[in-house]
Image (cartoon, rainbow, N blue to C red; front, side, top):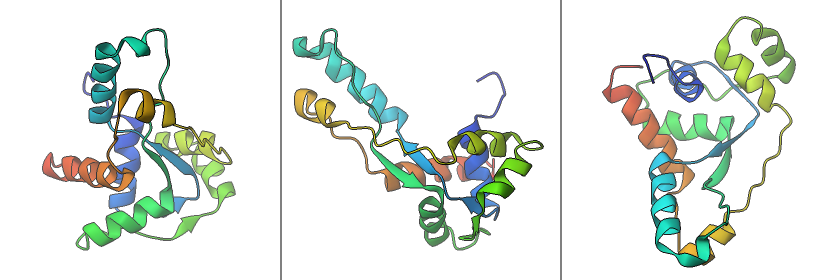
Length: 143
């Protein structure tokens, strides 16, 4: 990604370094599941011309923080929730907050049933994706 950090990386870094989390829904999709879904779609004729949702589940940021706090007791993960108005103020100064500000109040509720039934797709649980993402960031000394 030409040396630029993704907003997802920045959000995970924020959580792992102790920043309280906003009460927003985060749609969790694992790139490995997306790759699996593409392969399954290429192999099934019934997938021609179809669109599939590659999101495994939704988690709120506070849920993610609790998962990370349990998995990384040595990190300063906070389970405190930031009020929405604070996010809008911080969005003027911090890129991750700008992204989170756009997510306040959104309720995604995407349905991946078609991918599961038609293609036999079975995505990883959101918790696995969250933990694997965090571990990648820790292993690569990003946090």
